[in-house]
Structure formats: structure tokens, C-alpha cells
Image 1 (tube, helix red, strand yellow):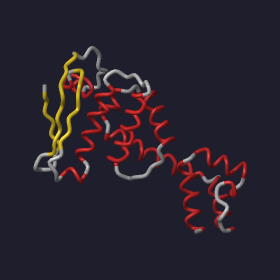
Image 2 (cartoon, one colour; image 1 turned 135 degrees about the horizontal axis):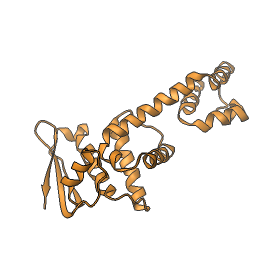
Image 3 (cartoon, helix red, strand yellow; image 1 turned 60 degrees about the horizontal axis):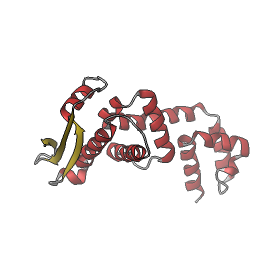
Image 4 (cartoon, one colour; image 1 turned 45 degrees about the vertical axis):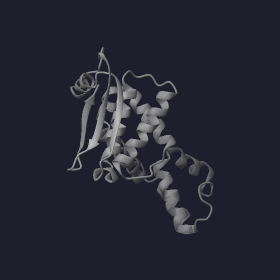
Length: 197
């Protein structure tokens, strides 16, 4: 049990910046009291090791890369400072549970959908998040060999919206257009989308 406790404490040091401060001020026992004396000494040494900071940076970079690569339209739509705040809030509320890009990105989409329901107001964001979440869901391995399909409702022209975002332009005055994009997995396991009026 001691080894598991040591590993859990070490992991928390990487994931939770405030935890290091707690252990420094209140002692190692504040974090895990079932450690051996050798493990306690190791943790005391690790608290001041610069390698801990490097590990934190690498961990954050890995998580950030997952979100940025899996959600390109969402990333382009939300201003960088606001996106950084939202990602920070997401990470505070959602410790990492998977190394898979799709799982992390879908969890972030769910987080954003909750925020939208609570009043987060970024024009076009609701549709973009629903679309990217659906796209990721269809790409999950269990859907790649199925005939799964999903429909995403849009209130604005998705073609124009996507084009502006793909060009790096902040979308403004996208014409209203009540339509749906219907996504499905083809026989090659690729996601395809078609417009439905």
C-alpha cells in the first residue's frame, strides 16, 4: 500500500500546483501519512527539484496539444486569453483520466456545453462545439466499424462559418440558415458529413 500511496502523492505533485505548497508548509504527512521513511525523504527532495517543474510543463503541454489538435474550430473561435481561462477551469475540475486525445477533447466539449448552458456567450460556439464533439464521437474506435450517424443542428450557415474559421478569420455576420449536418462513418472508417436542409 505504501508504494501506491507514494505514486499517488507524486502524481498529485505533478497535477496540482497547490499541493506542493501544502506539503512544504504542513509537511509530507499532510499529503500521505502511510509512507515509509525512505519515501518521505524522497518526496522532500522532489519538492525542491526543478525536474518537477519540467514534468508539470510537459504534462500541461501534452494535455493542451490534445485539445488544440482535436478541436481546431473551437480553438479558433474562442479568443486565446478566454480559451486559456476555460482550459484552466476544465483542468481544475477534471483531472486527467485518459491518454486518448478523443476522450480528453470530448470531456472538454461537455465542459463547454455546460458553460454555454450557464451563460458563456461566444457567438457560434454552441454549434461549433456540438459539431466537433459529434465528429470526435464518430471517430471513436467503436464507431469506426459501424454505421453510426449523428445530426448537428445549425442556426447559421455552417459552410461559411467553417470557411471563415479555416482561414483564421473571426466569423462575423454569418448568414442565418436553419439546417443540419449529418455525419456518418463510411465503409473505410472515415467520417463524412452532408448538409441537410
